[in-house]
Length: 284
Image 1 (cartoon, rainbow, N blue to C red):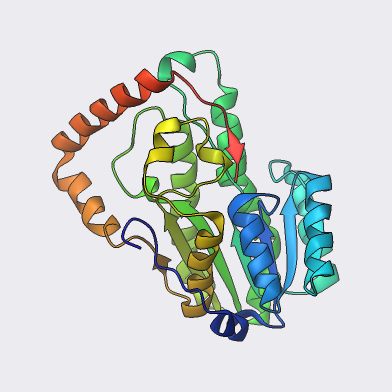
Image 2 (cartoon, rainbow, N blue to C red):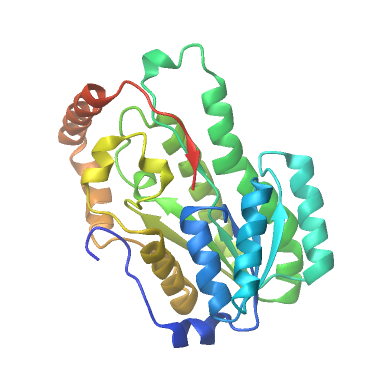
């Protein structure tokens, strides 16, 4: 509870918040997205699950529906702007204004700078899925939600966008930070039309994304089901943020203690470099 955002594991309260509502969850084929989709369907929501992996998505859809829930799978690559435009039009036609959008899809990348000089695509792919893709999705879905006068956007983000940047994570942190900043900028606008925005800042969740960085496996973290409970709290309470209690002091300290923070980053870089010079990417 101290290391990560607060959680609520109360099926009755979650049911009161989402029963009968239409919820879209991106990155729903594994990890946080899958756990969230299953939890919301069990609470009585109609869950639209979105991801690239068609076969995996269809298996999850079938499993949810067989268990008495309601789920509809939409296979799409969120980095394809045209495909996202088609998706949002289809979803609005099929379901009308959405009640909730859980923007969870993302990709992680850790790679040293000296290995990126000939890899500009590292930056393109992190920007596409962590920043542009979620924006394209919301640009297509928000008009109907705002016209309807209600809705809730839940952004799944990282504590890394709020503290001093860490070495080897530049592409990831920059892309996640860009979407975080954009969403915080538009939140006052959409709030005036009845659409709330909540960002959940996770420290560490034990999904496929952390596997290429062994040191992360030794740090305190949440399971995907526990992460879904943190998202449940966001849906129940509708706060501006759900974040670990240490995040705001750390955010302030990263500004006031910039020198020590940079020295800590150098130490962290040496620790990571001894384990592995690079890692691959994986979506949630």
